[in-house]
Length: 437
Image 1 (cartoon, rainbow, N blue to C red):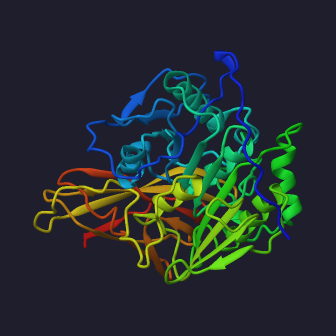
Image 2: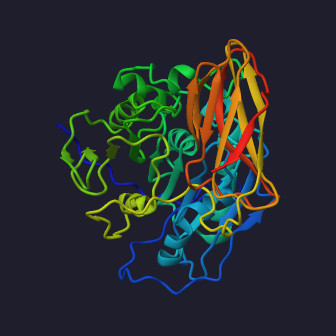
Image 3: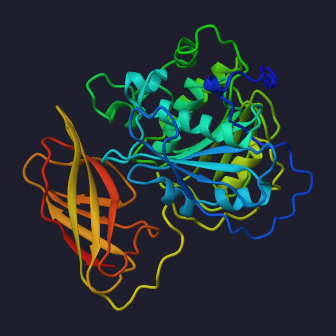
């Protein structure tokens, strides 16, 4: 049993000081690619209330529509707005369709979004408020359509997409979360950015409980609610696979539909897709499970599928897997002869039971096209989860290798926060051996 998705009601204009309009253009009638763009990513400063000192980057195509769409694109942990711009195809899609892409960027040392604090989760402060201020700035200058506004993100950005749709449901039409967790799953009260129970997939609530978390933050609001597209790999060892179903439970309950799929199919090999609250491309909830895939599931071509879910007819039903794409810049100089490299572990936060660190990788006198890091822990330390690297442990020895897209480092340059991890025990900074791969 399911119900149809509630159509979004166009909201009237309000005073500029309270403007919350951010949105998307009308459906494009002719889907031919638009001319190559000379537009570039621009940093915007002084955009409004910014409690957590976020940076704002904006991509406006040369052929921007008179009332353009807005896609809020949220980066992964250790990433940035510019990296997400370079490493995904949202700017190219903006060139084709005339919408605007907002790339918020975290400045705290972890480069992770605040999906934990009461302030961010309530819309009372921190990152959710800063991102919303950016959206208001874009609306005031580009007259965005309030009936369509979208958010998407990978990993930490996927978690923040869940937060933004739950905190500002009256603003968003839809979201697409790649490897995320439900809204409030990562909540903490001790100041920690990390919630090991949630990342480990051990928080199991009923659909009603998950839905109530969204509704209780929006007292007096009865909809329409944002639609949600959810992606997750079955072998995700950073944000474990049970979080896939928990997100489905949350957003189906918010939409007043059950957890029995109205459609189940296999759009391509090893992809299992289910839709809830409808069978079409714009169902209330669409969930895509990638069999045998880990946390770094994002691949080139997936943004087009998200755009179709948002409401654009992009004709995205390929029968073969898209070419794997990075979540870091897609172009880099050709690596020279093998040279040395070095790496350093940098602690960014710690708490009673664990700590978080990022790892910088520096190339020597020649560029490298890959890296392999090893170190030995003192007694009591282990890695409980990691991102943007393939990590193995043997006793107290840790080995980490790049995941292709983050392997290239220019001669004499440092790839800051090349990858990151959560450690157990007390925070330490071991000596790391780096070998070019």
